[in-house]
Image (cartoon, rainbow, N blue to C red):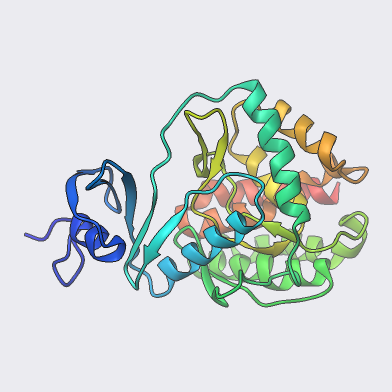
Amino acid sequence: MTHPLMAEDGEDPGAAAARITGHAVRGERRLSGSLAEVGLDGGQLVMVKRGDEPGAVHAEAAGLCWLADAGTVRVPHVHGYDRRWLVTDLVPQGRPTAQAAVRFGRGLAALHAAGAPAFGAPPPGGLVNAYIGLAPMRNVTGTDWSRWYAEHRVLPYLRAAVDRGTLRPAETAVVERVCERLPELAGPAEPPARLHGDLWNGNVLWGADGHAWLIDPAAHGGHRETDLAMLQLFGCPHLEQVLDGYQQAAPLAEGWADRVGLHQLFPLLVHAVLFGRGYAEQALAAARGALA
């Protein structure tokens, strides 16, 4: 029987790490169906991740490198990757602290300020056809955020949720109305920010070094409030301190708190497509709140 972490060609995480890094492996520990911790000769620990969807590993590696290039928030070093395997540094885990949260907020503001060529721009060397979690995500560029957000982030997942039966066709009108009114709901114009793109709490690791680390991005150019809205959607330790640190470094435009639900529409609809009706109901509630 093939192990769940073994590739179709029979290669396991240790063999993949040895091939990609050029170092002998002294041990490995399976963490999940797609992750393993591998010890290399010399004592270094790396994380080995298997990606099954075409282009998923490439997109993630390009995103990690783009975020790291900003030199702001800490990101695990990418040792190498191929069509199926990604090898990065392992982040030793610590506990979240208020001090680390403030530092993370400031770093996230600086990451966003590093910018992107356009809304929807993929990382350099990245893919147009990328992913957010397990869902396909197209990085099609635009210059007007309202139009781009509706056309390439909200409406594709709205249609997919209907196709899957998660949303009823009659329920789409409220989300479509938000998209029509986006120019007046979006607040002041913002330049394209360098987004993590899938910034829920599980993709923020609190390291033993006292810093927050970012993993598993769906990186692209977007509106900075979208990253912050996603961070608030699923909870984050010391969230108030994260937001305080962000505001100290780069104050948000007036009314940003009223736009959180607007920016949460995208991740909620993605989750509705992937995980079902409960998230669809949350997306509808967010849409109604945005219109209120």
